[in-house]
Length: 177
Image 1: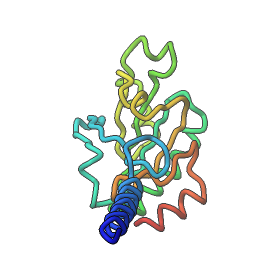
Image 2: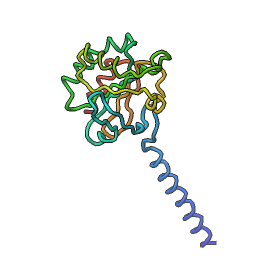
Image 3: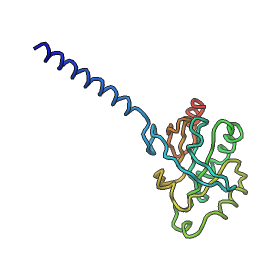
Image 4: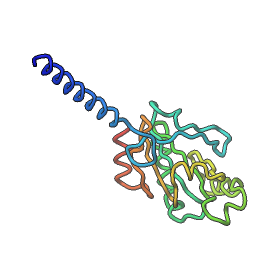
């Protein structure tokens, strides 16, 4: 009888330890595109021909990922905010603006490279811009409209997914620097 009680006690303790360990593992960030998920890694070339790989910034600095289009009026209105953000915090946060003109049927008929380069020059964009003509990042990040913006912390975890840059986003950004 005593051996049976010891065996039951050991089994109960084993189940408790397993439960605690499982709970701790489930608390780690999982890959995905929602807030609290580990942002899916990607590599893209910006307009200057430089390679941007999201995982290169893990442990170094947050990334502000902006999906935008040249035909998007909200995207255009936000340019001054991003230029200011780049000027003030460019050494502490990486801004990557991914053009998704390919979301529209008429833009997807041709490469957006020339159009986006002219746009970046006209509005004097001081932050990195890349193209997603092949729609790889649109699919990876489930982008359905513009703008779509993600604030990714130093650990690579999505802290905010929102259509516009606002005060709450600015506060979260300041808290993770």
